[in-house]
Amino acid sequence: MTDVQAETKQFQAETRRVLDIVINSLYTERDIFVRELVSNAADALEKFRHQNLVEKVDFDAHVPLEINIDCDDTKHTLTITDTGIGMTREELETNLGTIAHSGSGKYFEELAEAVKKDVNLIGQFGVGFYSAFMAATKVTVQTRSYDGSEGHEWVSDGNGSYTISPCPGLHRGTKIIMELKEDAHTYGQKFTIERIIEQYSTFVPFPIKVEGKTVNTVQAIWTRSKNEITEEEYNEFYKFVGNAGDEPMYRLHFSADAPLAINALVYVPKENFEMFGMGRMDPGVNLYCQKVLIDQHSENILPEWLRFMKGVVDSEDLPLNISRQSLQDNALVMKLRKVLTKRFIKFLNEEAIRDEEKYQQFWKTFGIFIKEGVTSDFEYRKDLGKLLRFESSASEPGEMISLDKYLGRMKDGQEKIYFINGTSRSAVEASPYVEMFKKRGIEIFYTLEPIDDFVLNHLGEYEEKKLVSADAADISLPENAQESADDKEAETVDALPKDQVTALCSWIKERLAGKVQDVKVSTRLVDSPAMIVNVDGYMTSSMERVMQASGQDNPLSMGSKKDLEINASSPLIKKLAQLRESDTDFAGEVVEQVYTNALIQAGLMVDPMELVSRNYRILERAVGTNE
Ligand code: ADP
Ligand code: MG
Image 1: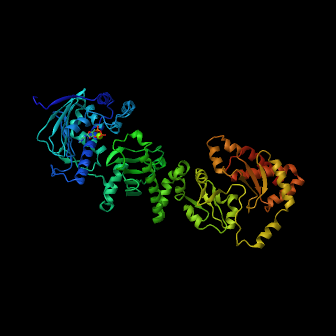
Image 2: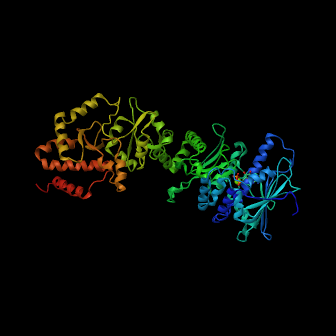
Image 3: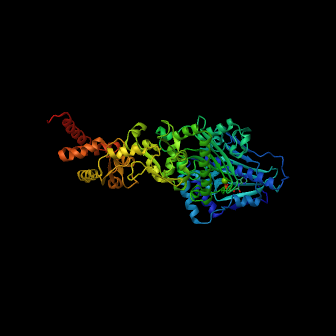
């Protein structure tokens, strides 16, 4: 009491404001003060460890690096002790009496806003220490610097002032003693503390002992070298970060020094929970900086379409006191994100080469996210093309192949990559669109999900080969060498003469006025009499179908232009040319029906009642009712 060196000091005005904000904040997430103090302790240990590496420290060299937590449920105190770098008297005053990063008044507005919303954010404002006053009426800090200088004690009740006095007999490090508020007595209980440590600080890379017993058995394994980590440890860690009960599908553990220092350990789970109708997932990767959690379930560290991933990314290059808000447009974070995303895409490509069967499993479960990436993320669109898989005319049913594989077996003279959408493999194979592909032996992708055409349209091209939907107009397929000249001659001889076809086309066009833009002779129909093709090239029938199904009268769909292509070798079309002369009305009915059938084959909506009554009229004629 009579110590001449004891001094009472006022907190800097800014500190008082921070204390006000903290003390008056909602206590819904009060637990976080434990994390803040533990992360400060971990920081102090990290700093010591580093210092000791730079220049061997003699003072108290034998004291092990650890954090001790003691609870006293009768005195209602909580004590957190670390053997870290400690503080000199000067440092005590600046670190716990002033606010370092409070340049502008905006800082306080932001802090007050953030804390109101989520007390969790306090640490990111570089004022985590003061959160102790959420739970304590009085905080005592006893500390001694690693340099061996005299130890000191700092005491405050958070009300404007603090006292500092010398404190002899301390070891290196810092002890924080909290006298708990009446409504915060739970923090004087061991199980409360253990629960909080488990929740927030398990991966602090120093032993955390509660009442002498180490509680954080799991270490910051992402910083350890790969060959020291067992499969079991990897899986345990996955269960922890992924909140999972099973084992992961993939694991990527990598470190880099340039262009950024990164330690990342990320996993792909076995299940896609969005597929189970559980709604949109939160991101699952946590951002650490020097092993201290900065941003749990970070929205910033990976693009949105990688939200299914779980794990940890740690970068020493990030400033420890970075605020969660500023992560969003932090240049370092953006760079980090790019490096990680590229690395992960590369990883998936390697995995696909290493074990294609397993990759197919991944694709079935998570392919939808990759497709989302292609449609939503211009930055990685090109790279993601490699990861896409679809069935094709040359693949076994259910087997998906890559664009690379397709490229590798393209026909001589084939300039484009073709695809056609349908609801099932059998539906696609029965459609008129694949007839010429089959005949000429040209491989075509079967895109069986409605989103696929959007994906391939966004991709646009792959390895400089255009991606084209087979229901587009003016497709000319490379000729087949095996297709004999005889064959072709037979076709032309067999077909309707040119002048008759031209006349027929313009007559059909008249009959279908307002429904199709043009009617042309097809160069690629083999058996079917006719088919619908899309003129503008962008809008495929499947995209239009999606829009129709979702009830959108999309301007694109309304304005989308279609042609009808007819098959001049088809017996029906040949007969139609004659019928037009003998019975124009009935020929008109047939044209309507051919058109409707072509719409159905394109997967587009038709008026079913109209179809049925016309169909009956044609049937009546066929059985000869009106003869
Ligand atoms: P931040 O950790 O973001 O810097 P805090 O309010 O949590 O903000 O802590 C303020 C400062 O007090 C720290 O930067 C550090 O210098 C000092 N400090 C806090 N706790 C300790 C500790 N246990 N050991 C050494 N220094 C500490
Ligand atoms: Mg802190």
